[in-house]
Length: 261
Image (cartoon, rainbow, N blue to C red):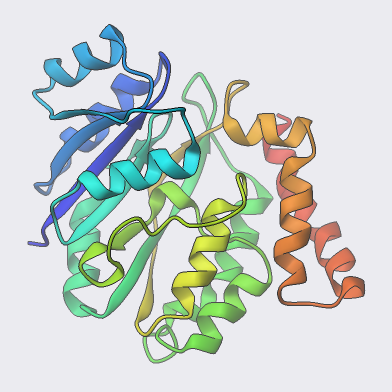
């Protein structure tokens, strides 16, 4: 069994936090679970105590990058999954991670497919999910998944990797891996950086994660002020000329509709 930690990032008083915690505590395979926050409160502390979980508080102003690095760095295991407080994991998420990572110990990051849920926990299908599955198809082939050009090529078409589904091989990647000038595209930028390293991207084509979209979600807020679009244009610009970037964004914006429902 792999040595693994779910590092739960808590912020404010999310009504979904306990469901997220419960989903990782009740995994079919054993994992360490910790709760980390930069906005300490009785609400978050009490939930950590209820489930007998270590509770870590980061000093300083809240920042997505700093909060993720802090949670990631608190994990003392070989592998880490950064758990977002609104989302839910299938009870066999870690079971499948263990199976796949056992076969591929050179994995840098491992990811799964996912489903979208709303504030009422109703599962929705969306065409963007199919598009992202197609984008990751080359990673299903083990003899390609460790090639730098494949790892980068997959991401040149957009960020098809759902960040909270990712398991990081901390023993290889080291500490504080989230280093980027972006906010919304933070994960995409970091995945591109990781893709340049020696090792593989392991893709588990199973829906083992439920990504919640609601009015208070960070992604939805980014869409309202166009930050998401600006950052994604810059990311595409790292791979393609301006004419191709415009074409790709036309198709990529289809995924924005998920946040409008």
